[in-house]
Amino acid sequence: MYLLIIEDEEKATEQLKKGLAEANVFTDVANNGLQGLILAQKKEYDLILLDVMLPGASGWEVLKKLRAGGSSTPVIMLTALDSVSDRVMGLQLGADDYLIKPFAFSELLARIQSVLRRGIERKPDLLRVADLEVDFFSHSATRGGKRLDLTKKEFALLSLLIHRTGEALSRDRIAERIWNLGFDSNLKIVDVKIGNLRVKVDDPFEKKLIHTVRGFGYVLEDRDEGI
Ligand code: CA
Image (cartoon, rainbow, N blue to C red; front, side, top):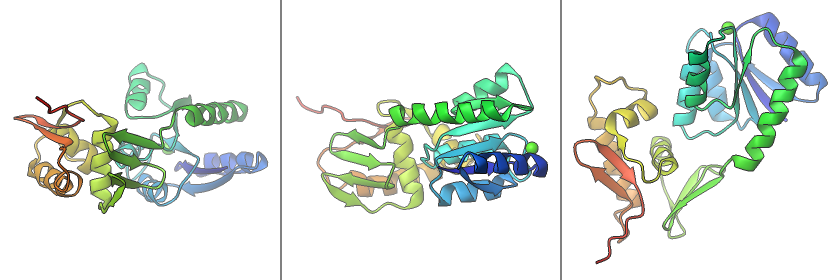
């Protein structure tokens, strides 16, 4: 098992590392948010322990960017804050569990095991809409069995759309999830990137899967466009 610890407090990190090593768990450590995000995107970890209060980028931002990038690696948030709104926010952003500091090491181990068990049952490695397949394990997409040559951002965009099949996503929401842009940003980028994605995903095929929701945003779905 291979874990990433994103935590800036040295003493806490050392204790975690040592305890986990005794449980035969290998770890990498990042002591700020940005470094953590880079590692998380580069390597395939079984699980990430993510502190909320971090220099560089907060645990929330790291989690948001990870999920926007299509990563489904389980995340346990570590935090000194114990408020319902924080917990709800973490779960909405896609955290798998939550531990309030200080915690007993045995509790952490139990949570890790439970999250990993759940993950095996739940984690979709592959999502399919009509003849479009997105494989999150190999980070690739095919249509009609033919591999689509997507950039990283295009893959993230397609991942977001296919995870929400049938749900209209606003341009704001897409911009926020994929490019971390605020609500006042120029949303042209969304239209341009969706256009690029369509060239690859839809143009060569008769059946279109990415649809414009006029004045709002986009939706990916298999529409029966028969008579
Ligand atoms: Ca901290």
